[in-house]
Length: 214
Length: 385
Image 1 (cartoon, each protein chain N blue to C red):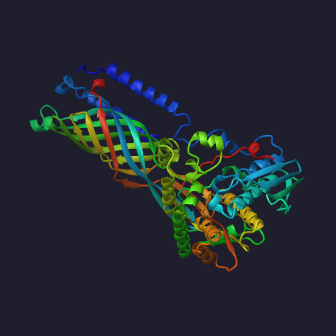
Image 2: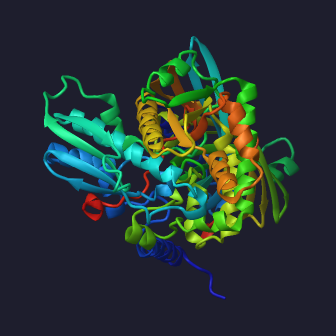
Image 3: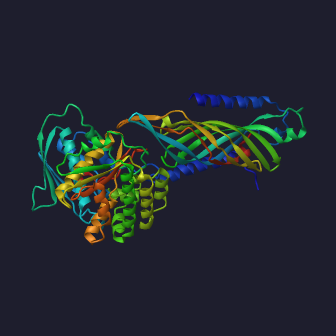
């Protein structure tokens, strides 16, 4: 819950900061600054079953896929000041963010996942129809089926946006377990948790919906 | 083309959400969660207010049994329960000697005895009391005794024991496991061989894989096995027996798509079975073989069933799981009934390690990743004489 509070505070702060950036941003007149999004994602994560039996630990691991359906809000974070270093930088480079949440399901265990994420990315507008993004993301996935398997996500989003509104995101992440399930078993104890691991695979297909933006 | 405004989008999203709700409701049985309903009601055990003899009978129908055929009939009075074999509920060429059928009856008998004793009744068992009636496999006399001061953990495990066909941890057996499991096997003539050495376990695994291949390659066995597969919720509700996707040990996505895509062919089912045997079902901390001195004695098989059921209940009470892996024993029987080369008979003889003993019941035991799902059960009313 503390992590969620931090994320909410972070998102709120970003929104306030963006609002304070002023109305002199020329894009405001032509494009909404806050754009709702929907996305589908396919990714994987690992779990660890640790058996503490006869005084020693034996770890087993498994990977499983999960799919997510996310709704989000793309929002600006920062632009170069009008007196910035170079006109090309002012035009092509900016920092934006994306707050999202949704629901997902794991393929093996059938657990329901509720992720909450905030990604901050440096965007490079290479063409009018092509934007590249890279940055850092912080999130938490609540396991609604087994709360002790909730985990923290530290992501590295890499995205290609086509025609502003269609975005393919590759988001590898470091997963940090926030709990585990333990129970006694013959000869000792078992502990089941999400595995602390760098996960190389998550792909999102995201659609921005400017018509709902403001 | 008109540009969609915000209101249009909101209408669309609302409509889509409503559509999802309607479709989900229309799907009826609900593909994603495990099946529920009357076919699973007997697992709500014991039912409240049942007299001791009914508690014992309710426990009997929750026992392990081959292919979930539930080959039992029960005659219940307040002072005795007779357990009969329903020989029509067999698996044909898979169990040509009806070895597994009688082991399943032994499992039911053990559940019955445990439940009776935990409900304030003694349970004096006579196996095969009437030679003229071989389908009467056991008579159990019930007499009033004091309730045990502490609930028997095996009794408590009866409603949570489900064959776990899923993945187990890759962990060695606890040092004390062989002695603890062996102590559960008290039936005269029945012996347990618990394989914990990696070489023996590898032999068991490869033998099981090869026996599965041989089983699948036998059209008659494959056909007879798949006859007991129940695919749809309607089939499950109608029959309340058989092998189901939920109880297969497969992951949630496989179960979801399996139910959504329609009944698989026998070849597809066999392929999944072989993959599971080579994959998730090759995980174990140990393999067990229950053997008897005779080749096909019904009393021995009933005793083997009692021992296996006790092991299964104990495993659940200890956070462990078991799964029968009887492919080699089934091929052993097939070799005998068809006069085939005794290939798997030889493998099992080597694993049991004593001449003159017959492997009757094979299983794996270990620490499961996940809890097993329930299998459908016929209600007591369907099996009472």
